[in-house]
Length: 543
Ligand code: VG1
Ligand code: CO
Image 1 (cartoon, rainbow, N blue to C red):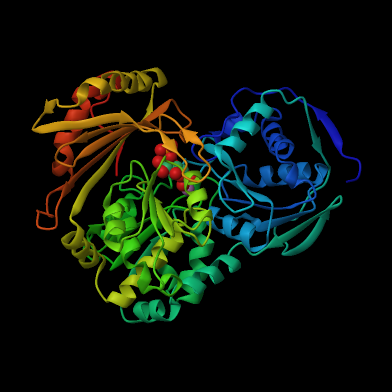
Image 2: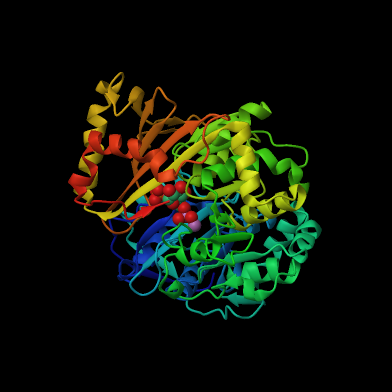
Protein backbone atom coordinates (compact mmCIF):
# COMPACT_ATOMS: atom_id res chain seq x y z
CA UNK A 1 0.00 0.00 0.00
CA UNK A 2 3.02 2.25 0.20
CA UNK A 3 2.94 5.42 2.22
CA UNK A 4 -0.47 6.89 1.67
CA UNK A 5 -1.38 10.23 3.01
CA UNK A 6 -4.08 10.53 5.64
CA UNK A 7 -5.73 13.88 4.90
CA UNK A 8 -7.84 15.67 7.45
CA UNK A 9 -11.31 16.72 6.32
CA UNK A 10 -14.57 18.01 7.67
CA UNK A 11 -17.88 16.33 6.92
CA UNK A 12 -20.70 17.53 4.69
CA UNK A 13 -24.28 16.91 5.74
CA UNK A 14 -25.86 16.41 2.31
CA UNK A 15 -24.19 13.30 0.87
CA UNK A 16 -27.33 11.19 0.85
CA UNK A 17 -27.74 9.22 -2.40
CA UNK A 18 -31.17 9.54 -4.04
CA UNK A 19 -33.08 7.30 -6.47
CA UNK A 20 -29.86 6.54 -8.31
CA UNK A 21 -26.61 7.65 -6.68
CA UNK A 22 -25.37 10.94 -5.31
CA UNK A 23 -26.23 13.79 -7.69
CA UNK A 24 -25.28 17.39 -7.17
CA UNK A 25 -24.31 20.46 -9.10
CA UNK A 26 -20.73 20.37 -10.38
CA UNK A 27 -20.04 23.36 -8.10
CA UNK A 28 -21.10 21.28 -5.09
CA UNK A 29 -18.74 18.47 -6.08
CA UNK A 30 -16.00 21.06 -6.52
CA UNK A 31 -16.12 22.06 -2.86
CA UNK A 32 -13.01 21.13 -0.93
CA UNK A 33 -12.86 17.36 -0.30
CA UNK A 34 -16.52 16.86 -1.28
CA UNK A 35 -15.77 14.05 -3.71
CA UNK A 36 -12.98 12.66 -1.52
CA UNK A 37 -15.28 12.48 1.52
CA UNK A 38 -17.94 10.54 -0.32
CA UNK A 39 -15.53 8.11 -1.95
CA UNK A 40 -13.76 7.44 1.34
CA UNK A 41 -17.17 6.88 2.95
CA UNK A 42 -17.86 4.16 0.38
CA UNK A 43 -14.55 2.40 1.10
CA UNK A 44 -14.95 2.76 4.86
CA UNK A 45 -18.48 1.35 4.75
CA UNK A 46 -17.63 -1.65 2.55
CA UNK A 47 -14.61 -3.54 3.90
CA UNK A 48 -14.98 -6.14 1.14
CA UNK A 49 -13.49 -3.61 -1.28
CA UNK A 50 -10.17 -3.71 0.57
CA UNK A 51 -7.99 -6.23 -1.22
CA UNK A 52 -10.74 -6.52 -3.82
CA UNK A 53 -11.37 -5.66 -7.44
CA UNK A 54 -13.60 -2.86 -8.68
CA UNK A 55 -14.87 -1.42 -11.96
CA UNK A 56 -14.62 2.30 -12.72
CA UNK A 57 -15.88 4.56 -15.49
CA UNK A 58 -18.38 7.24 -16.30
CA UNK A 59 -20.55 8.90 -18.90
CA UNK A 60 -17.86 11.37 -20.01
CA UNK A 61 -19.41 14.46 -18.49
CA UNK A 62 -17.49 17.39 -17.01
CA UNK A 63 -15.43 16.26 -13.95
CA UNK A 64 -15.38 12.66 -15.19
CA UNK A 65 -11.64 12.52 -15.73
CA UNK A 66 -10.80 14.49 -12.63
CA UNK A 67 -13.01 12.24 -10.48
CA UNK A 68 -11.49 9.10 -11.99
CA UNK A 69 -7.97 10.10 -10.94
CA UNK A 70 -9.16 10.97 -7.42
CA UNK A 71 -11.06 7.71 -7.02
CA UNK A 72 -8.06 5.72 -8.27
CA UNK A 73 -5.78 7.43 -5.75
CA UNK A 74 -8.20 6.88 -2.88
CA UNK A 75 -8.86 3.28 -3.93
CA UNK A 76 -5.13 2.62 -3.99
CA UNK A 77 -4.62 4.11 -0.54
CA UNK A 78 -7.50 2.04 0.82
CA UNK A 79 -5.87 -1.16 -0.37
CA UNK A 80 -7.98 -2.03 -3.40
CA UNK A 81 -6.04 -4.68 -5.35
CA UNK A 82 -7.26 -4.07 -8.89
CA UNK A 83 -9.37 -1.66 -10.90
CA UNK A 84 -10.90 -2.32 -14.31
CA UNK A 85 -11.09 1.11 -15.89
CA UNK A 86 -12.99 2.01 -19.05
CA UNK A 87 -10.66 3.55 -21.65
CA UNK A 88 -10.76 7.37 -21.51
CA UNK A 89 -12.88 6.99 -18.39
CA UNK A 90 -15.88 5.84 -20.41
CA UNK A 91 -18.33 3.18 -19.20
CA UNK A 92 -22.09 3.02 -19.50
CA UNK A 93 -24.10 1.95 -16.48
CA UNK A 94 -25.16 -1.38 -18.05
CA UNK A 95 -21.61 -2.11 -19.23
CA UNK A 96 -20.32 -1.50 -15.70
CA UNK A 97 -22.92 -3.88 -14.30
CA UNK A 98 -21.85 -6.52 -16.80
CA UNK A 99 -18.13 -6.08 -16.09
CA UNK A 100 -18.67 -6.46 -12.35
CA UNK A 101 -20.48 -9.73 -12.94
CA UNK A 102 -18.25 -11.09 -15.66
CA UNK A 103 -15.01 -10.46 -13.81
CA UNK A 104 -16.28 -11.31 -10.33
CA UNK A 105 -15.60 -7.81 -8.99
CA UNK A 106 -16.57 -6.59 -5.55
CA UNK A 107 -18.32 -3.50 -6.85
CA UNK A 108 -18.03 -0.56 -9.19
CA UNK A 109 -18.42 3.17 -9.59
CA UNK A 110 -20.27 4.82 -12.45
CA UNK A 111 -19.66 8.54 -12.60
CA UNK A 112 -22.90 9.89 -13.95
CA UNK A 113 -25.88 12.05 -13.17
CA UNK A 114 -27.61 10.19 -15.99
CA UNK A 115 -30.18 12.40 -17.69
CA UNK A 116 -29.28 15.56 -15.77
CA UNK A 117 -27.52 18.20 -17.88
CA UNK A 118 -23.73 18.16 -17.85
CA UNK A 119 -20.95 20.73 -18.21
CA UNK A 120 -19.42 23.15 -15.79
CA UNK A 121 -22.81 24.51 -14.78
CA UNK A 122 -24.54 21.15 -14.93
CA UNK A 123 -24.63 18.17 -12.61
CA UNK A 124 -22.24 15.45 -11.62
CA UNK A 125 -22.98 12.18 -9.88
CA UNK A 126 -21.59 8.96 -8.48
CA UNK A 127 -23.42 5.66 -8.49
CA UNK A 128 -22.04 2.72 -6.57
CA UNK A 129 -22.93 -0.82 -7.59
CA UNK A 130 -22.35 -3.94 -5.51
CA UNK A 131 -20.88 -7.34 -6.36
CA UNK A 132 -23.99 -8.64 -8.15
CA UNK A 133 -23.67 -5.70 -10.56
CA UNK A 134 -26.75 -3.90 -9.23
CA UNK A 135 -27.11 -0.52 -7.55
CA UNK A 136 -26.32 -0.52 -3.84
CA UNK A 137 -29.53 -0.90 -1.85
CA UNK A 138 -30.73 1.59 0.72
CA UNK A 139 -29.14 -0.21 3.67
CA UNK A 140 -25.74 0.40 2.08
CA UNK A 141 -26.42 3.93 0.84
CA UNK A 142 -27.80 4.85 4.27
CA UNK A 143 -24.63 3.50 5.90
CA UNK A 144 -22.44 5.48 3.46
CA UNK A 145 -24.45 8.61 4.23
CA UNK A 146 -24.13 8.02 8.00
CA UNK A 147 -20.38 7.62 7.66
CA UNK A 148 -20.07 10.76 5.54
CA UNK A 149 -21.66 12.84 8.27
CA UNK A 150 -18.83 12.21 10.70
CA UNK A 151 -15.83 11.60 8.44
CA UNK A 152 -12.66 13.23 9.72
CA UNK A 153 -9.99 12.03 7.27
CA UNK A 154 -9.45 10.14 4.04
CA UNK A 155 -6.61 8.10 2.63
CA UNK A 156 -5.04 9.11 -0.66
CA UNK A 157 -1.99 8.12 -2.67
CA UNK A 158 -0.06 10.18 -5.16
CA UNK A 159 0.04 9.09 -8.78
CA UNK A 160 -1.72 9.29 -12.10
CA UNK A 161 -3.00 6.77 -14.63
CA UNK A 162 -3.03 7.30 -18.38
CA UNK A 163 -6.65 6.40 -19.07
CA UNK A 164 -6.13 6.28 -22.82
CA UNK A 165 -3.66 3.40 -22.71
CA UNK A 166 -5.25 -0.07 -22.95
CA UNK A 167 -3.40 -2.47 -20.67
CA UNK A 168 -2.05 -2.66 -17.16
CA UNK A 169 -0.50 0.12 -15.08
CA UNK A 170 0.26 0.48 -11.38
CA UNK A 171 -0.76 3.11 -8.90
CA UNK A 172 1.41 2.32 -5.88
CA UNK A 173 0.47 -1.30 -5.14
CA UNK A 174 -2.81 -1.25 -7.04
CA UNK A 175 -3.16 -2.69 -10.54
CA UNK A 176 -5.18 -0.60 -12.96
CA UNK A 177 -6.27 -2.38 -16.13
CA UNK A 178 -7.56 -0.04 -18.80
CA UNK A 179 -10.06 -1.92 -20.95
CA UNK A 180 -12.15 -1.33 -24.05
CA UNK A 181 -15.44 -0.14 -22.51
CA UNK A 182 -17.52 -1.62 -25.31
CA UNK A 183 -16.18 -5.07 -26.30
CA UNK A 184 -17.49 -7.22 -23.44
CA UNK A 185 -20.85 -5.52 -23.54
CA UNK A 186 -21.16 -5.93 -27.30
CA UNK A 187 -20.31 -9.64 -26.93
CA UNK A 188 -23.04 -9.99 -24.33
CA UNK A 189 -25.58 -8.40 -26.67
CA UNK A 190 -24.48 -10.68 -29.47
CA UNK A 191 -25.01 -13.68 -27.20
CA UNK A 192 -28.60 -12.67 -26.45
CA UNK A 193 -29.90 -11.51 -29.80
CA UNK A 194 -29.88 -12.81 -33.34
CA UNK A 195 -27.40 -10.40 -34.93
CA UNK A 196 -27.64 -12.17 -38.27
CA UNK A 197 -31.37 -11.54 -38.41
CA UNK A 198 -30.93 -7.90 -37.39
CA UNK A 199 -28.12 -7.46 -39.93
CA UNK A 200 -30.38 -8.83 -42.67
CA UNK A 201 -33.18 -6.55 -41.54
CA UNK A 202 -30.91 -3.53 -41.78
CA UNK A 203 -29.59 -4.66 -45.16
CA UNK A 204 -33.12 -5.11 -46.51
CA UNK A 205 -33.86 -1.40 -46.62
CA UNK A 206 -35.23 -1.08 -43.09
CA UNK A 207 -34.00 2.32 -41.92
CA UNK A 208 -32.79 3.17 -38.45
CA UNK A 209 -31.69 6.35 -36.69
CA UNK A 210 -30.07 6.29 -33.28
CA UNK A 211 -29.43 9.40 -31.20
CA UNK A 212 -26.73 9.06 -28.54
CA UNK A 213 -27.41 12.62 -27.38
CA UNK A 214 -23.66 13.34 -27.06
CA UNK A 215 -23.56 11.11 -24.01
CA UNK A 216 -22.04 7.72 -23.28
CA UNK A 217 -23.71 5.44 -25.83
CA UNK A 218 -21.97 6.88 -28.92
CA UNK A 219 -19.00 4.46 -28.79
CA UNK A 220 -21.32 1.55 -27.98
CA UNK A 221 -23.59 2.37 -30.90
CA UNK A 222 -20.64 2.66 -33.29
CA UNK A 223 -19.43 -0.84 -32.43
CA UNK A 224 -22.79 -2.55 -32.11
CA UNK A 225 -24.84 -0.90 -34.86
CA UNK A 226 -21.93 0.08 -37.07
CA UNK A 227 -19.19 -2.55 -36.91
CA UNK A 228 -21.24 -5.56 -35.87
CA UNK A 229 -24.59 -4.88 -37.57
CA UNK A 230 -23.41 -2.99 -40.64
CA UNK A 231 -25.38 0.21 -40.13
CA UNK A 232 -23.85 3.19 -41.97
CA UNK A 233 -22.38 5.54 -39.39
CA UNK A 234 -24.34 8.55 -40.66
CA UNK A 235 -27.40 6.97 -39.06
CA UNK A 236 -25.85 7.50 -35.65
CA UNK A 237 -26.59 10.98 -34.41
CA UNK A 238 -24.60 12.89 -31.78
CA UNK A 239 -22.39 9.85 -31.28
CA UNK A 240 -19.39 11.59 -29.73
CA UNK A 241 -19.58 11.95 -25.93
CA UNK A 242 -18.96 15.59 -24.96
CA UNK A 243 -18.25 16.94 -21.47
CA UNK A 244 -21.36 19.11 -21.67
CA UNK A 245 -23.40 16.67 -23.76
CA UNK A 246 -23.46 19.35 -26.44
CA UNK A 247 -25.53 21.57 -24.16
CA UNK A 248 -28.35 19.01 -24.32
CA UNK A 249 -30.31 17.18 -21.69
CA UNK A 250 -30.01 13.49 -22.44
CA UNK A 251 -33.37 12.34 -21.20
CA UNK A 252 -34.90 10.54 -24.14
CA UNK A 253 -38.36 12.08 -24.10
CA UNK A 254 -40.33 14.21 -26.57
CA UNK A 255 -38.98 17.46 -25.12
CA UNK A 256 -35.29 16.71 -24.67
CA UNK A 257 -34.96 14.37 -27.66
CA UNK A 258 -36.93 16.74 -29.86
CA UNK A 259 -34.66 16.48 -32.89
CA UNK A 260 -35.14 12.72 -33.04
CA UNK A 261 -38.89 13.14 -32.65
CA UNK A 262 -38.88 15.74 -35.44
CA UNK A 263 -37.00 13.32 -37.68
CA UNK A 264 -39.35 10.45 -36.86
CA UNK A 265 -42.44 12.55 -37.49
CA UNK A 266 -40.98 14.24 -40.56
CA UNK A 267 -41.50 13.53 -44.23
CA UNK A 268 -38.64 11.06 -44.79
CA UNK A 269 -38.94 9.36 -41.43
CA UNK A 270 -36.89 6.20 -40.86
CA UNK A 271 -38.66 2.96 -39.95
CA UNK A 272 -37.13 2.90 -36.50
CA UNK A 273 -35.80 5.62 -34.22
CA UNK A 274 -34.13 5.21 -30.86
CA UNK A 275 -32.21 7.26 -28.34
CA UNK A 276 -30.60 6.64 -25.03
CA UNK A 277 -29.96 8.68 -21.92
CA UNK A 278 -26.74 10.06 -20.45
CA UNK A 279 -25.36 6.82 -19.01
CA UNK A 280 -26.97 4.39 -21.43
CA UNK A 281 -29.40 2.68 -19.10
CA UNK A 282 -32.58 4.17 -20.55
CA UNK A 283 -33.94 4.50 -24.09
CA UNK A 284 -36.88 5.30 -26.29
CA UNK A 285 -38.17 3.55 -29.32
CA UNK A 286 -40.16 5.17 -32.11
CA UNK A 287 -41.60 3.86 -35.32
CA UNK A 288 -42.21 6.04 -38.33
CA UNK A 289 -44.56 8.75 -36.94
CA UNK A 290 -45.25 6.58 -33.93
CA UNK A 291 -44.07 6.78 -30.32
CA UNK A 292 -44.02 3.72 -28.07
CA UNK A 293 -44.73 4.63 -24.48
CA UNK A 294 -42.05 3.06 -22.28
CA UNK A 295 -44.68 1.23 -20.23
CA UNK A 296 -46.03 -0.32 -23.44
CA UNK A 297 -42.50 -1.13 -24.52
CA UNK A 298 -41.95 -3.13 -21.33
CA UNK A 299 -45.17 -5.07 -21.92
CA UNK A 300 -44.40 -5.70 -25.59
CA UNK A 301 -40.88 -6.89 -24.75
CA UNK A 302 -42.27 -9.24 -22.09
CA UNK A 303 -44.81 -10.62 -24.56
CA UNK A 304 -42.28 -11.16 -27.37
CA UNK A 305 -38.98 -11.93 -25.67
CA UNK A 306 -39.36 -15.65 -26.43
CA UNK A 307 -38.79 -14.81 -30.12
CA UNK A 308 -35.15 -13.95 -29.38
CA UNK A 309 -32.36 -16.48 -28.73
CA UNK A 310 -31.51 -15.33 -25.20
CA UNK A 311 -35.08 -15.75 -24.00
CA UNK A 312 -36.32 -18.59 -26.19
CA UNK A 313 -37.29 -20.69 -23.19
CA UNK A 314 -39.65 -17.99 -21.94
CA UNK A 315 -39.53 -15.71 -18.95
CA UNK A 316 -40.13 -16.53 -15.28
CA UNK A 317 -41.84 -13.33 -14.19
CA UNK A 318 -41.99 -9.58 -14.71
CA UNK A 319 -41.69 -6.59 -12.43
CA UNK A 320 -42.44 -2.93 -12.92
CA UNK A 321 -42.05 0.13 -10.75
CA UNK A 322 -45.30 1.26 -9.17
CA UNK A 323 -45.89 4.33 -11.39
CA UNK A 324 -45.32 2.24 -14.55
CA UNK A 325 -48.56 1.38 -16.32
CA UNK A 326 -50.10 -1.97 -15.65
CA UNK A 327 -49.71 -3.14 -19.25
CA UNK A 328 -46.94 -5.56 -18.24
CA UNK A 329 -49.16 -7.12 -15.56
CA UNK A 330 -51.65 -8.14 -18.21
CA UNK A 331 -48.93 -9.87 -20.20
CA UNK A 332 -47.84 -11.72 -17.06
CA UNK A 333 -51.39 -12.80 -16.40
CA UNK A 334 -51.67 -14.06 -19.97
CA UNK A 335 -48.37 -15.95 -19.70
CA UNK A 336 -49.39 -17.26 -16.25
CA UNK A 337 -46.24 -15.94 -14.64
CA UNK A 338 -45.97 -13.69 -11.57
CA UNK A 339 -45.78 -9.91 -11.77
CA UNK A 340 -44.37 -7.62 -9.11
CA UNK A 341 -44.80 -3.94 -8.31
CA UNK A 342 -41.77 -2.21 -6.77
CA UNK A 343 -40.88 1.37 -5.80
CA UNK A 344 -39.20 3.63 -8.35
CA UNK A 345 -35.48 2.91 -8.80
CA UNK A 346 -33.63 -0.09 -10.16
CA UNK A 347 -32.28 -1.20 -6.79
CA UNK A 348 -35.70 -2.60 -5.89
CA UNK A 349 -35.55 -5.18 -8.71
CA UNK A 350 -32.28 -6.67 -7.45
CA UNK A 351 -33.61 -9.31 -5.07
CA UNK A 352 -36.28 -10.47 -7.51
CA UNK A 353 -33.66 -10.88 -10.23
CA UNK A 354 -31.19 -12.61 -7.90
CA UNK A 355 -33.77 -15.18 -6.82
CA UNK A 356 -34.88 -15.86 -10.39
CA UNK A 357 -38.45 -14.74 -9.75
CA UNK A 358 -38.36 -12.36 -12.68
CA UNK A 359 -36.59 -12.27 -16.02
CA UNK A 360 -37.74 -8.89 -17.28
CA UNK A 361 -38.41 -5.63 -15.48
CA UNK A 362 -38.85 -1.99 -16.25
CA UNK A 363 -39.93 1.50 -15.42
CA UNK A 364 -42.15 4.09 -17.07
CA UNK A 365 -39.11 6.35 -17.29
CA UNK A 366 -37.83 4.12 -20.10
CA UNK A 367 -35.57 1.81 -18.22
CA UNK A 368 -36.14 -1.80 -19.24
CA UNK A 369 -33.86 -4.76 -18.81
CA UNK A 370 -33.56 -8.40 -17.87
CA UNK A 371 -31.58 -10.76 -15.71
CA UNK A 372 -28.58 -10.55 -18.10
CA UNK A 373 -27.20 -7.82 -15.83
CA UNK A 374 -28.48 -5.99 -12.75
CA UNK A 375 -29.12 -2.60 -14.31
CA UNK A 376 -31.49 -1.13 -16.77
CA UNK A 377 -30.13 -1.33 -20.27
CA UNK A 378 -31.12 0.99 -23.08
CA UNK A 379 -29.22 -0.68 -25.93
CA UNK A 380 -30.48 -4.09 -24.83
CA UNK A 381 -34.07 -2.85 -25.14
CA UNK A 382 -33.39 -1.33 -28.57
CA UNK A 383 -31.75 -4.55 -29.81
CA UNK A 384 -34.64 -6.55 -28.35
CA UNK A 385 -37.05 -4.47 -30.45
CA UNK A 386 -34.93 -4.90 -33.57
CA UNK A 387 -34.76 -8.66 -33.04
CA UNK A 388 -38.54 -8.84 -32.53
CA UNK A 389 -39.10 -6.78 -35.70
CA UNK A 390 -36.69 -8.99 -37.63
CA UNK A 391 -38.68 -12.06 -36.59
CA UNK A 392 -42.19 -10.67 -36.89
CA UNK A 393 -41.46 -8.63 -40.00
CA UNK A 394 -43.88 -5.94 -38.85
CA UNK A 395 -43.45 -2.26 -38.16
CA UNK A 396 -43.13 -0.79 -34.67
CA UNK A 397 -46.64 0.61 -35.04
CA UNK A 398 -48.17 -2.67 -36.19
CA UNK A 399 -46.59 -4.61 -33.35
CA UNK A 400 -47.85 -2.07 -30.82
CA UNK A 401 -51.36 -1.89 -32.25
CA UNK A 402 -51.60 -5.65 -32.33
CA UNK A 403 -50.53 -5.70 -28.70
CA UNK A 404 -53.36 -3.30 -27.82
CA UNK A 405 -55.82 -5.47 -29.75
CA UNK A 406 -54.84 -8.41 -27.61
CA UNK A 407 -54.42 -6.77 -24.21
CA UNK A 408 -56.18 -3.42 -24.44
CA UNK A 409 -54.43 -0.07 -24.32
CA UNK A 410 -53.15 1.76 -21.27
CA UNK A 411 -53.18 5.43 -22.16
CA UNK A 412 -50.26 6.66 -20.15
CA UNK A 413 -48.53 9.96 -19.67
CA UNK A 414 -46.23 11.59 -17.13
CA UNK A 415 -46.30 15.29 -16.30
CA UNK A 416 -43.13 16.66 -14.72
CA UNK A 417 -43.02 19.96 -12.93
CA UNK A 418 -39.28 20.57 -12.73
CA UNK A 419 -37.32 22.91 -10.47
CA UNK A 420 -40.26 24.05 -8.40
CA UNK A 421 -39.80 25.36 -4.86
CA UNK A 422 -39.26 22.46 -2.49
CA UNK A 423 -41.72 23.78 0.08
CA UNK A 424 -44.40 24.20 -2.59
CA UNK A 425 -43.88 20.69 -3.95
CA UNK A 426 -44.11 19.31 -0.43
CA UNK A 427 -47.28 21.30 0.15
CA UNK A 428 -48.87 19.68 -2.91
CA UNK A 429 -47.90 16.22 -1.67
CA UNK A 430 -49.22 17.02 1.82
CA UNK A 431 -52.55 18.27 0.48
CA UNK A 432 -53.06 15.02 -1.39
CA UNK A 433 -51.76 12.85 1.44
CA UNK A 434 -54.13 14.45 3.94
CA UNK A 435 -57.10 14.01 1.65
CA UNK A 436 -56.44 10.29 0.93
CA UNK A 437 -58.64 8.86 3.73
CA UNK A 438 -61.69 10.79 2.49
CA UNK A 439 -61.38 10.11 -1.21
CA UNK A 440 -62.97 6.68 -1.58
CA UNK A 441 -66.41 6.99 -3.15
CA UNK A 442 -65.95 10.59 -4.26
CA UNK A 443 -67.19 11.42 -7.75
CA UNK A 444 -64.96 13.70 -9.75
CA UNK A 445 -65.51 14.62 -13.41
CA UNK A 446 -67.24 11.38 -14.22
CA UNK A 447 -64.77 9.18 -12.31
CA UNK A 448 -65.47 7.53 -8.95
CA UNK A 449 -62.58 6.98 -6.56
CA UNK A 450 -62.19 3.30 -5.74
CA UNK A 451 -59.41 3.69 -3.21
CA UNK A 452 -56.38 5.82 -2.49
CA UNK A 453 -53.19 5.24 -0.55
CA UNK A 454 -49.53 5.93 -0.07
CA UNK A 455 -47.44 3.13 -1.58
CA UNK A 456 -45.41 1.08 0.89
CA UNK A 457 -43.29 -1.83 -0.29
CA UNK A 458 -42.19 -4.91 1.53
CA UNK A 459 -39.44 -6.72 -0.33
CA UNK A 460 -40.66 -10.30 -0.85
CA UNK A 461 -37.12 -11.66 -0.50
CA UNK A 462 -35.56 -9.93 2.48
CA UNK A 463 -38.60 -8.33 4.09
CA UNK A 464 -37.10 -4.82 4.02
CA UNK A 465 -39.65 -2.04 3.96
CA UNK A 466 -39.72 1.11 1.79
CA UNK A 467 -42.42 3.50 2.94
CA UNK A 468 -44.17 6.41 1.22
CA UNK A 469 -43.02 5.68 -2.31
CA UNK A 470 -45.76 7.71 -3.99
CA UNK A 471 -49.42 8.64 -3.55
CA UNK A 472 -51.94 6.67 -5.58
CA UNK A 473 -55.57 7.35 -6.42
CA UNK A 474 -57.47 4.53 -8.15
CA UNK A 475 -60.80 4.92 -9.95
CA UNK A 476 -63.63 2.45 -10.54
CA UNK A 477 -63.04 2.77 -14.31
CA UNK A 478 -59.58 1.22 -13.98
CA UNK A 479 -57.87 4.60 -14.32
CA UNK A 480 -55.46 5.93 -11.72
CA UNK A 481 -53.05 8.71 -11.03
CA UNK A 482 -49.88 8.69 -9.00
CA UNK A 483 -47.90 11.56 -7.58
CA UNK A 484 -44.37 11.51 -6.19
CA UNK A 485 -41.34 13.68 -5.74
CA UNK A 486 -38.30 12.92 -7.86
CA UNK A 487 -35.17 11.69 -6.16
CA UNK A 488 -32.75 12.62 -8.95
CA UNK A 489 -33.19 16.37 -9.43
CA UNK A 490 -30.67 18.86 -8.08
CA UNK A 491 -32.57 22.11 -8.31
CA UNK A 492 -35.54 22.70 -6.00
CA UNK A 493 -37.94 19.79 -6.37
CA UNK A 494 -39.43 17.93 -9.31
CA UNK A 495 -43.02 16.79 -8.96
CA UNK A 496 -44.07 13.88 -11.10
CA UNK A 497 -47.72 13.22 -11.91
CA UNK A 498 -48.39 9.88 -13.61
CA UNK A 499 -51.73 9.45 -15.41
CA UNK A 500 -53.12 6.17 -16.67
CA UNK A 501 -56.45 5.07 -18.10
CA UNK A 502 -57.38 1.79 -19.69
CA UNK A 503 -59.55 0.69 -22.60
CA UNK A 504 -60.03 -3.01 -23.29
CA UNK A 505 -59.14 -4.94 -26.45
CA UNK A 506 -62.35 -3.87 -28.18
CA UNK A 507 -62.18 -0.23 -27.10
CA UNK A 508 -60.96 2.79 -29.02
CA UNK A 509 -57.17 2.73 -29.27
CA UNK A 510 -56.96 5.84 -31.43
CA UNK A 511 -57.67 8.59 -28.96
CA UNK A 512 -55.29 11.44 -28.67
CA UNK A 513 -53.14 10.72 -25.61
CA UNK A 514 -53.54 14.17 -24.09
CA UNK A 515 -57.28 13.96 -24.56
CA UNK A 516 -57.50 10.47 -23.11
CA UNK A 517 -55.77 11.61 -19.94
CA UNK A 518 -56.97 15.21 -19.62
CA UNK A 519 -59.84 14.49 -17.21
CA UNK A 520 -57.42 12.66 -14.93
CA UNK A 521 -55.01 15.58 -15.04
CA UNK A 522 -57.84 17.90 -14.12
CA UNK A 523 -58.96 15.67 -11.23
CA UNK A 524 -55.42 15.50 -9.92
CA UNK A 525 -55.16 19.26 -10.09
CA UNK A 526 -58.45 19.75 -8.26
CA UNK A 527 -57.42 17.40 -5.49
CA UNK A 528 -53.94 18.86 -5.02
CA UNK A 529 -54.16 22.48 -6.24
CA UNK A 530 -50.93 21.59 -8.00
CA UNK A 531 -50.74 24.28 -10.67
CA UNK A 532 -51.80 27.07 -8.34
CA UNK A 533 -49.45 26.00 -5.57
CA UNK A 534 -46.35 25.69 -7.74
CA UNK A 535 -47.47 28.65 -9.83
CA UNK A 536 -47.18 26.96 -13.24
CA UNK A 537 -49.84 26.70 -15.88
CA UNK A 538 -48.38 23.59 -17.49
CA UNK A 539 -45.80 20.87 -16.85
CA UNK A 540 -42.14 21.36 -17.81
CA UNK A 541 -42.09 18.02 -19.60
CA UNK A 542 -44.85 15.71 -20.78
CA UNK A 543 -43.66 12.24 -21.70
C1 VG1 B 1 -35.94 8.84 -12.26
C2 VG1 B 1 -36.93 7.87 -12.84
C3 VG1 B 1 -36.68 6.48 -12.30
C4 VG1 B 1 -35.23 6.07 -12.59
C5 VG1 B 1 -34.30 7.13 -12.03
C6 VG1 B 1 -32.85 6.86 -12.35
O1 VG1 B 1 -36.08 8.88 -10.86
O2 VG1 B 1 -38.26 8.28 -12.54
O3 VG1 B 1 -37.60 5.58 -12.87
O4 VG1 B 1 -34.93 4.84 -12.02
O5 VG1 B 1 -34.63 8.42 -12.59
O6 VG1 B 1 -32.66 6.71 -13.71
P1 VG1 B 1 -36.84 10.05 -10.07
O7 VG1 B 1 -36.64 9.76 -8.62
O8 VG1 B 1 -36.28 11.33 -10.54
O9 VG1 B 1 -38.28 9.91 -10.50
V1 VG1 B 1 -31.20 7.16 -14.37
O10 VG1 B 1 -31.24 6.60 -15.88
O11 VG1 B 1 -31.34 8.84 -14.35
O12 VG1 B 1 -29.99 6.66 -13.40
CO1 CO C 1 -29.61 6.79 -16.80
